[in-house]
Length: 221
Image (cartoon, rainbow, N blue to C red; front, side, top):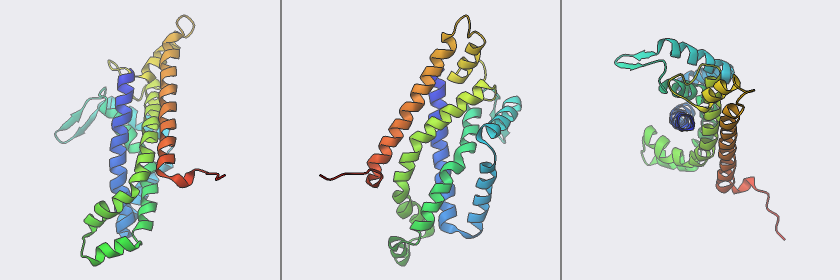
């Protein structure tokens, strides 16, 4: 169960990060109609509570699976919760990145790159992207933790991982039915879920402190 939960959390966080980088950088740098279209799409996703949107997408995709041309994914595949979590969490990273890119595009080094004849794509992913890498590194472990939590919640409610696969969420759901006779069936996966998410959050705080020294309050004696 832990293996599937960690796999879903890490893969969903990686896909969320990649898509958020693309949408955030394009919206912040190009502005105009591109920014409007991407921002409205992010606002639509942002408008729904995470759990409700995850349940709606997870249930609909799990019932009939997903077919996109030659690609066919069965309803009980681990790719379904990965896809759902990826879609739900894109705005939570794309919006902060867009704000940073809007600020960076007016900096002197971007003006110098334009003066040297660099194209928009080279400026976006060669000049601006390295300057938002610290923000991405800080968000990534937190995205993994949130993805694991959301997967557990969806699986507990029957909209995430489905049999014959197992995860911490499905194990907790099955353990609740036997909480009186065998409480360890729910307590053990629940404890592992809490410890994993806590460790990822502590790690994320450490990364933030390491990459942003201004976040620390230093007292000189």
